Image 1: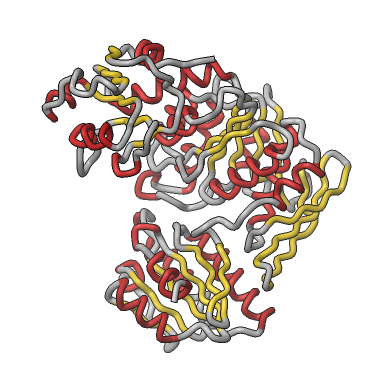
Image 2: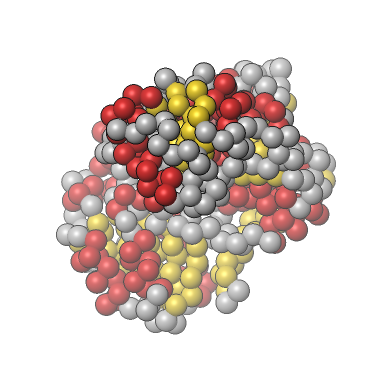
Amino acid sequence: MAFTAAEAAAACGGVHYGPDTDAARQWRCDSREVRGGDGFAAIRGAKTDGHLYIKQAAEQGAAVILAEREGLERAGVNPNDFPAVSLIVTERRTEEALALIAAEYLRRVTPKTIAITGSVGKTTTRELTTAAIASKRRVHGAVRSFNTIIGCALTALSMPEDTEVLVLELGTNHFGEIAEMVKYFPPETVVITEVVPAHLEGFGSVEGVLRAKLEICGSSKLSKIIYNYDNSLLRDVMSHNYDNVIKTGVGYGGGADLSIESCAVALGEGGPATSVSCRFEGTEYAFTAPLFGRQHAYNICFAIAAAMDCGVSAEDAAAGFASMKQLGGRGLCRRAAGGWVIDEAYNANPASMKAAVQNAEEAAHSLGLKKTAALAGMRELGESAAKYHRDILSMLSGFDSVFLLGAEWAECGAPLAPNMRLCGSLDEMTGLVVKDGLDGRLVLVKGSNSYGLKKVVSALTER
């Protein structure tokens, strides 16, 4: 089943030039990432314009290029400049055209679509779900955190034409974003992992976060909702709404459809392991995944509910978990120089920061190690930012060393304890953490991704 560039152009109301090659392939939005045979979508961003890099993408082997007619004119590019490239020219914004093209390809492939959203745990749940289903079905998911409308389009266009299950991740920082994604990529099954304070500058309150996440339930194909039963906001909404679909509540609380009975976390020479015992539809199950932290009990069980809905047995799902690798930046545990580094550098909000601190304390205690925390600020928390940063500082008295980066800590109004030091730059933090040493220590590294704490992780683990 070929989906050609000419058909893709028709799907977005555009015009096709050049050879009529396959439009379903790996697509890029950054010309520096283009490899031979890739598609390139020229997108106007806040800092630069992808149309300025069309020539570079073509020279690097792009087979298909999607561009705006006005963008080509601004960049001085003629549609006939690259006769070997299949060019789709649209009058729309490139991101809208890309979504329309991906939606048409999705309609042709017709996989069962699962979409995952939530304030925390989206990517981990997506990876777990994909791993569990892959043991039995042809499943396709994003290769990284593609949780925008552009990311979903890239994921859909890269799926093989024989895909049976597509797993998408939907993120948001403003109202209407998820609603737009489900319009183009309507899921049958949705997973809502959690609703907690995050992106409050866009949503105003946790009730606003709830409203934004529930946009996922506006899917025209919705048949099943898997959600966090222990979240009172979600539990209340689900008890009074969506009576025409199947709802599966996951949690420790009595009344959960999939009940978490126990969770144990271990960290040893073989890496981390989170083991969960649960009960679903009258049967007890046990699962283990190479993840670090009790919060992953929910993510594992969300994935189990989604996998079983796809006809995957518990045994096959467990085998899928066993084949997983740790996820970089999301609790990745690395053994180095006689100690452990817990890499949580990808992102942070109050709930995930609290969980990371608690997990690090428990692991360090069980291993008899000293504890160091290198923490950057949590962004997009609006007027509540000071309170949430004070709350985290109050949890750190048991750490031997705490290194802080970001104005959020300085502006939260809490005095720093003797074990804490506010760093003026990423370089200063990196130097101090390395000097503090790893031998006999567990070092937690966590903060909003924009602070670049991957540099601290690299300095500790690549020496």
